[in-house]
Length: 399
Image (cartoon, rainbow, N blue to C red; front, side):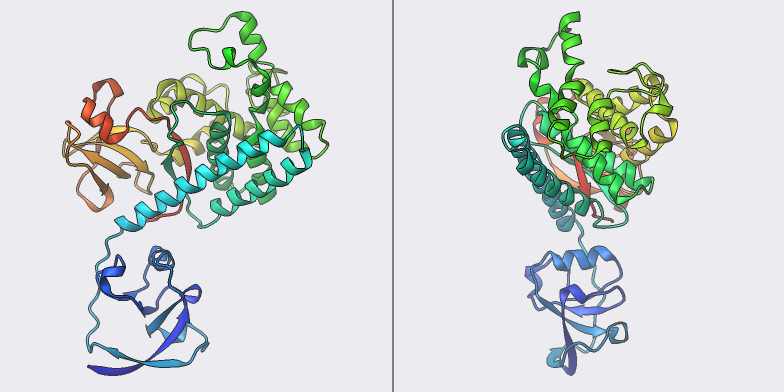
């Protein structure tokens, strides 16, 4: 064994290029060895997720200021390059996204419950929720979408609002809109359907076709929502515009004012598109089919540029899509990646047996085709939770 003096640094000061030693046994972390060369940001995030307060620097001292006194530590003479299993980090990342999503939905419900009785309190809590969403969006330069859900059989107004906010904010991020505009989009998305709470539940939850009277009443929800929020005198105009005009389309066929493109704010157009996609998603229970229908039947209602950005964000196979792989297993897309044909998936056999979480980008396997829910076995539906409602949240795992 060789003696070496190592620098002890807080995990917050790790940078790419360092080789560090973790003060843990090999059984307590997902790396194959305790010595890790930091070549990717995801390795730093993985280490931060281990709840460590410090690490030891083995190589790369010149990348850091001298911020701590070295300590003596026993080292093997040879440092063996480690192989990393990224799956534990990916699973943890998805769990964190799910937790953030559920908290956002619960916080949104609290806000909705206070908007009439305590508007100032509701506004403060809504602003805090928006800041949380903005923080989660900007955690990395390349946020992805991941599949999340509430565990309920129906999508609530608040759950729908969070998912619309996430899609809209990702569109805005891709277009390099300002943080102020992203905040308006987030706030408008959260509240865009609050007016539906003034629509009788028998109309909102009706499964069959609405009568003309019921349809006209439902179409009043943007006005109801605008009135509720505007009378508080607390919310910004751009956000109120989203609430009032999130069903307006650039061809003038929307409601309540039949506005055309030149009269619809870009921030409102973004939320209108995300909302249209979410509505189709809930109708067809397939993210990929919903995207196809939007592209084919609503291209005149939304800006071609915005639709292109949405397609880029969702990928060819958005999270929640059920697919068959080239190895003949079936799978549910869990998270988008930079390679649209090789997302991260939850896979099983046709019967539902042998479930596993897989990185297709690490395998010689791609998606072959999309599968309809009715073509799955009961076992596969249960294993993949294929009939669960679909919502989206940010994810920053990059591998």
